[in-house]
Length: 314
Image: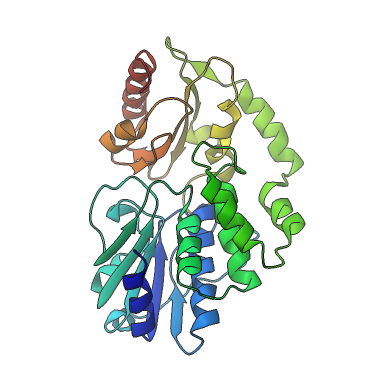
């Protein structure tokens, strides 16, 4: 399935790489990983990366490219880690001469001329890594490090049930390069002491629905100064605090921002994706998200999750 993708990359001299907005480790990892993969194998090509800043990953010291509209005229635009077109950062990908997508979310719509979508992968980085391996492309330590980062973060350090034997095979392939795991894991998971205290405080905010859906709701008044995106990084990472509560099989974190209420839905038993899609979002069967306009709508979403928790998991 990668033959056409490789042919497009070989064919176009200018390639512009996109991903979803408010990027996580997989979005940034796949974008940077593919950037270096192309530059390492085709050094004469113009390759650009566009998008908003990696607020959730402050150690990623990258200035994304600001390019003119005419750059797209004869270019290949590549979209990574995005299952819904309205979530893609920078809509100008539509104006490129040809478009290509690598994605591991549940298929919702056709987005690019060539769509490589496979939800059996734990991450978009895993899919790009398989593309590199199957195509016989050489790896550098830069491409390997960023692709490994996305695999680690989207698999929850290889804990989530999206992790398969293939995940470890591809991780081993990437580790053929001298990835500095100590530095990478420190950058990803070391926390400021103030954030640890904030997490402890937020554990006291956890509430439960009648069917034991755990949730945290953080109002905009409860937040410190928000980021440029209008969402506070500490709050948007709180969904993991509820993952290991005994008897809880669905959990959700709500964070108010300037653009609405950000909803992070998780489960270790149920397919919560249709509920995220109902409210304009998407993602995976057991990890999805959306942004709703207000608290009232967020509570309607919570009611839907509570009703799902009262059914038999399939």
